[in-house]
Length: 329
Ligand code: SF4
Image 1: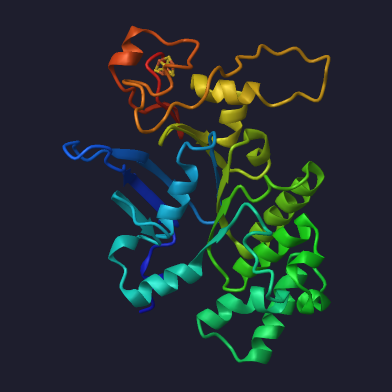
Image 2: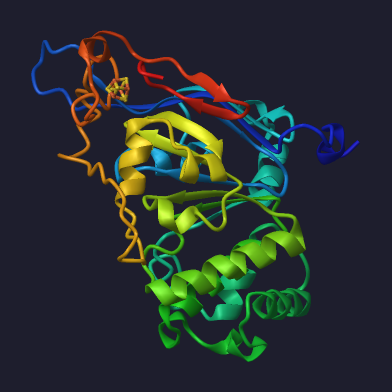
């Protein structure tokens, strides 16, 4: 039986349980004990078929490391990642190759992720070649079809990346991951390098492709406004941990965690007559090398109390499917 047929339809497509990724720090003295920095410390969530989970937090909070560890582009330190009900860490070489066809990544900088010396045909068709799929003319047909899907002329196949605008390059990046018909796409800040008007076009394209191809997205962004229209649920990450996760509507209309409220306060309101109370974030994200004790957000939290320095808050379910970690909830 093929591996994909073994899982139940009701299983989540992706399940991440207690994911940890640490990096060892360089020793500065001979007798110094080994030290580690925890980029991701105990992240858990699941992603259903056809769903988009927005993973949001400031730069350096561990969201990109989480995405890369899920795809095993870097090896997790501990925790479990299940794809279609199977533990990714136990995949045979053959199953890992299948997984890499099924789970793809879109990168932030479309120009840096496209080889300037390759034509669009070679860039978009490369994953097919790597996986030994189809003869050259069949691959060219597939490339033309996916270019059309992402709104580009098939004639563009013979051009090079520098001949395209930023938005067109990101379309090429998306076409490249679509060639293998993946079920899961991890999109790492896919629109942050683009102008605002182009961002909306790319997000609309991703929404359309999701409907047509039943894709699941883990959409990583530092900006809550960007993920609003694409996310089914949103997870807020701070210093290696998820501090709130909920259906998108709850995050935008009933945020519970003080950090989520601060992130929402930073979103500009287009109507100047509308008055809102803003709780703007003070200071920078603390270093993951020496994180604050208790609640990691306490050094910037306007509501911090004594207990926040002493105990790490546990995740609590505030209402069905809405979890947050804060002592005051
Ligand atoms: Fe703020 Fe304390 Fe809640 Fe952390 S636990 S978010 S410091 S109130």
